[in-house]
Amino acid sequence: MMLSSRQNPQVKELIKLQTRKYRRRRGQFVAEGLRLVADGLAAGWQPDQLVISPPLLSQEAAGQVEQWDYPRLDLVPELMDLVGDTETSQGVMAVFPTPESTLSQLQGDLVLVLDGIRDPGNAGTLLRTAAAVGVDGVVALSGCVDLTAPKVVRASMGGIFRAPWVLDVMAGELIPWLQARGFQVVRMEPRAGIPFHQYDYQGKLALVVGSEAHGISAELAAACTDILTIPMPGGSESLNAAMAATLVLYQALIARGL
Image 1 (cartoon, rainbow, N blue to C red):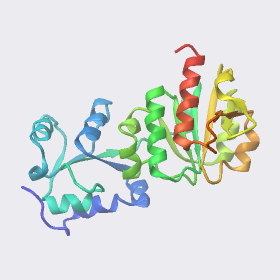
Image 2 (image 1 turned 180 degrees about the vertical axis):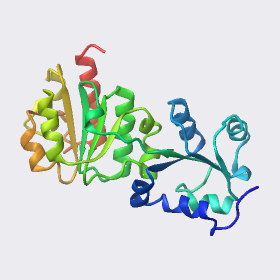
Image 3 (image 1 turned 90 degrees about the vertical axis):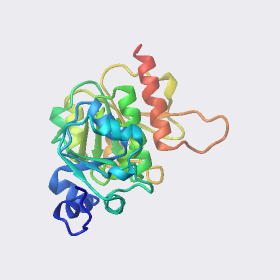
Image 4 (image 1 turned 120 degrees about the vertical axis):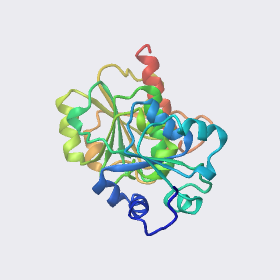
């Protein structure tokens, strides 16, 4: 049976999950689309609920959905469009629990810190890169775009499920945590830094990525031990924040012999 009323309590809950405040309160976020949901399941995440609109399913999607044994809610297409965030729904969504992660749970020696990143596309791409590189943790400082926002989740292309992340951390909490564990804290500047391909990258490394308009906070900048610069002989002023971070993270892999 497909639900068809917007007044249904379960439908109302899904609509509320479009807001950051309610996602925090419920400890849940939504992944939309067949590939994204399949990525989450493949990474070992267990959804609290599948949300399906059978008339919108492709033949491939219908076959795959039938193999998933999780609590399921079926909606008419009009409601699927209402609770989703994409322009053209594929008829597949999943509600996943938000992990209760903290700084103390992060392990390893390569951390990506997001400071003032507000663009969902940039944040999602940074998660995608972090997952591809094998970053040990992504730390989103307070003031960043919500990593569980639908646009960020989509832009991550499954990275949201494959890179450990911590939300809403204060700089005053992060800095002593990094220092106590012996991290080198580096940031990027368009000029006057160490050329990124000449940096050592050995030991514990925390790469701080700030907004393209405002950079990183003064508090965090003061805690940085080094500044990296990506040479731009072609004359461009700077690179997109996510692109610049991708170059640096892959250079770190090369320098570490991976």
